[in-house]
Length: 205
Length: 289
Image 1 (cartoon, each protein chain N blue to C red):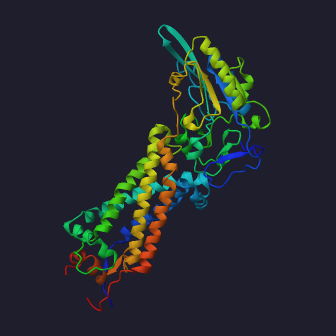
Image 2: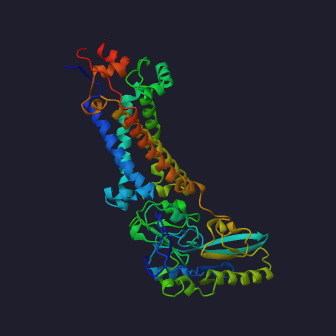
Image 3: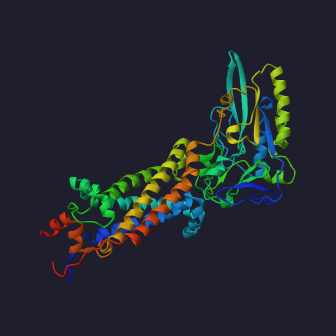
């Protein structure tokens, strides 16, 4: 029988999935409002006006839960020298040539980039979103600022969606990863291969 | 107001052709001759009456402007400016503010809801509130700061150029009621011609810079002004000199829409093809630790 190690607690998993679900809802409703080709997505939310009403509230829930998650994971996401080494061999990582990669802590450099992209984008989305939030807040902001805000909101949301596509794909691509967020555990072989420094720290081996 | 008897040139958030079998319609225009305006506000009253609107009485802001700003209930208002273009010669410039019915409407460009903003073949730009989702994007698109979101129903409202009256051969209510003939309505060609006569007259009377306000930055407008001081439109309660759709809105509603969608699509495809070519990253499981 293979040994499993705990990677995420139940609270961490719950927190992650609240953020994930609200992100999907915010992204679908946001795309509907951004690009007419996706306007049909408003049907998922009960029509155009409901999409306009719900989108910002979904975003706020996502923001609050993301902050809780970011605080939990913050200390694991500082860049180190090993990250620079890892990034240099990014081409090999992509081609599944993992031999001789530097030891990684709980997260590798790619995961850390995703983390910091989220840490920057989500607050920017919240602020720019409030500026154009009709009918509650937008009337308090000048039109020129709303124009800046809509462009910033669209651009940052786009970067974030790309970041999440990478994040989701990486979880599908790297086998044995998904269990970390569904059951909370990974195999020790997985941990040794991908995050050896974290493995040794956790198990004391 | 939905009016199916009018042909349509453009619809918001729609890429396929709009109903246009009847071909080119005569472009209409409303011409507001500021030199003839006496500030009686009959146009404001007529607008309220015809469109069944009743704004709150409100408070006096210390100037003649009342109400002091456009709202969901006030689609047109008189803006009073006291200026001294020549030292010691006070002039009272009274501009009837409201939707300019741009040939290149920023509101329509910004609107994300299909068919919520319609540009008729005759040039009128109309909001179809039943399709409005209340996002306020039209406010960011408008170079003249005209649309207002109603606090009552969260929908955007503005002057319709009385599209319902025009559709049945009548002139807009404000035109009908104007006691001095400062507001006239007809085909855009006729109105431009009429304005030329007025400008010649004003020039003879010493207003050497009199001009027609039909800003080309928004493709021309279907509401035009005769300005005594055509070189300084800002004198008229900050009428923009060279209005155009903000480059930010053009960026947002222009190249970014297809490019960002393409980027998202490509990212998904890149992942898919990476998986089927390079394959998943697997770890050999050991029997024991």
